Length: 280
Image (spheres, rainbow, N blue to C red):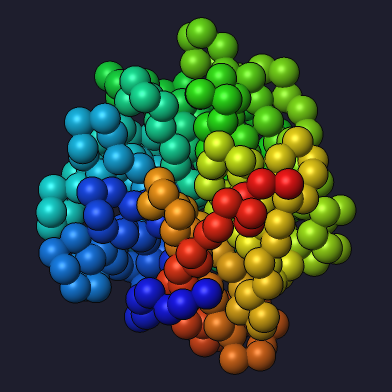
């Protein structure tokens, strides 16, 4: 792993678009990118979380505390879809299909505010901005990714330490819920999936306290990259052979203790992948 960028408190939702990396700093309240050639942040009034580029090139974001999907103007996130009547908790990760429909985590409870855990949901935002609940009773929904040419949606359930797959119906609804990968069993008892990224070879998973980013497919571990003491938060690829991973450094403190004390620093690392690293 080589260092790509620094400066974030907690880096979520990394996305590569037109030769540049974008990511949300949920703890720092900034949007980071190097689209103009240098790594810079824009201060936000309210933090973004998951990011996704629509087919028309617009950047959208799950606004963590505002229960809305925002659209980036270059200076701020205007409202793309208002989810206040539907969402029950903070918004998490975000992914879109080729038609421009978005899928977003409704986490269900605000852990940072001390709320007790309760099941979350997945919401689908259609191209006209209307929203529908497409999955209930998911345990801390997190990373989202499409596989099988969009026929399957994979969800990271952080609290359950697993990836769950859903069949995407013709109307965009989700069914046939099933286990895609037992992350605790494959990577280790402390592994809790956060951000994920799909490739033709499988799904990359940032395992936070598992201290590894792992490539899995159909409940099989293909490969794992050790991150030493760093906590891998999220990941994405550039569509070729580079994998970007956001890594949190707590200075040796337990993760939640460091987060509460605002003593976490995040960097972006890049891994040059070989064919052997992505195939069994």
